Length: 192
Image (spheres, rainbow, N blue to C red):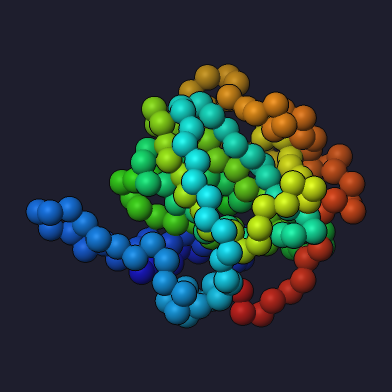
């Protein structure tokens, strides 16, 4: 396994060791001991699976009272994946890290608690799998608008407007989000 740091402490890209031959390939997408050894000791309690067509943008989502760290990957297609630091008091508050995840590169992206997460589908279709450290809690769900000008995320849009859910269209910017609706930063010396 190869761990690639991003510009945000704790947010990392993980390249698995792929064993391939004429039959196909095998890889371990998650191994608790190996992940703990690279600084990701979190226990995951829920797996989610989504399928989206080209041009769909999901996010930017987070949960407040029941925060979720996420380990995300793509098993079919290709997405542009983004994590935004929304922790009040963080030295990297309002900054984002991004990567391309695909069935071809087989990478995973670790998004810690306290970050908003979203992705945009670049291929005809994408199947997206993610592990979460807490259960989905609709009453705790929050979000940021995908095109917040202060974040200036360079989404690789195929058309001027992505396909959004009705809920994702209603989110405001980070600047307009009440401070009480943002997680607090706490320093952790052993973050990846």
